[in-house]
Image 1 (tube, rainbow, N blue to C red):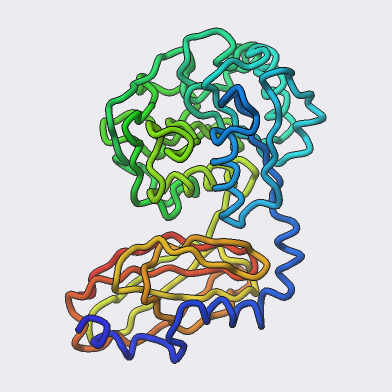
Image 2 (spheres, helix red, strand yellow; image 1 turned 180 degrees about the horizontal axis):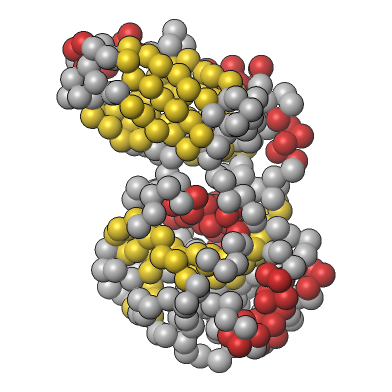
Length: 368
């Protein structure tokens, strides 16, 4: 009944996969060059003694699967400390520890230099919680005040927790994030006080820090969880929740993509009236496609020519609305009439920026 009531709200194209065929045929031909300009990032972690372990490979694969990075390389920081020149080959670096760095002080020094040169750094548990020497970043990282979650503050462990409050829903680091389960370990910072320049974006459901950024360094992000999922260790975060998205958002933000749009909003979603869907921060002059589902929030993996595998936060069946071209300011607006009989129907709506291979935040709405 719900889908029938919304039938006139759809485009003639019935299957969501057709959207990607349409986009590839008409709009992603020039986007291949854009995809080549996606940020190149690195994982520089002391995650496991074996460099081929899933503790490294799992987050690497998840970042690559988003299609938002030209490369996700693994940089050894357990047997040697990379030079500034080596790090400058990347737009952003993510680091965390479960074992010891070659030198926590030396790595802290070079990461501080890297941030000063414009590089992005994402620090995650246990590098921002450990009290053990060489498992936290030392040197100039501490003396220069680069920490967001002050290190050496201990960790909460084996106390299951989930996503709590999102304090800034419009912030790029939490774009599209609606669900996160830390698993049986749910390793997270014990402290709740951030550095003087720290800004908490999202918390665990017990109030501990999940995502925080810096008001001083726009390329700095701290994550209050271990990047590896339960695929690598049963105690880590649960796949199928938004850990992938938190990792990708943090790395994109640290890499200087502070606008992770498109940013989707809706007005007038009322039965019998015109709904207006607005996307901001899209690629100027690029195609913006709109889709919705009345079946749930997904996720669904989609292969997109020129973009790789993307995750959309919509469940099948997924319906199309009319695509629009963003204006010179990166805004795309479309309107459609909501059927008179659609009152009370729950819908999930998302947009796709074909030129930049980015999906928007998810809107979960009920037709008024």
